[in-house]
Image 1 (cartoon, rainbow, N blue to C red):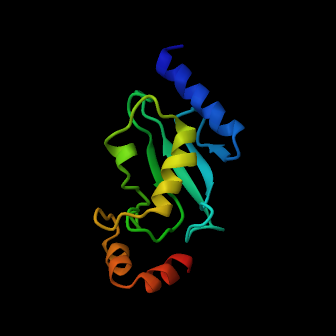
Image 2: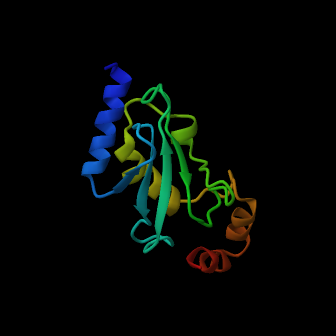
Length: 141
């Protein structure tokens, strides 16, 4: 077994041993779905999202592909595709990170601290900057 596949297996097992519900897609270890709960003290608290994760062959040297499967209203998530605009996953990924980091740190930070100046959902970003209370009502809806 090569080093990237060993690491993939280890990271996936670590994620499964944590508090996340993980469902494998197909037979391999490269695609799976994780149930992700909105972070405490955020507008998303109480919500549960299904996150599709695809691990490239070069994982952990190349970042995982992350996408929301069910709808979420957020400036940095494309409402149609569910893809995520998150620098740490898209540009500054490091093999030092693992899958648990994605779900324990990166996604909660994304939901707690949206960045309307770098939007994938322009409407959500504009509403957030123009009328924060309407934005909050829309998120909770």
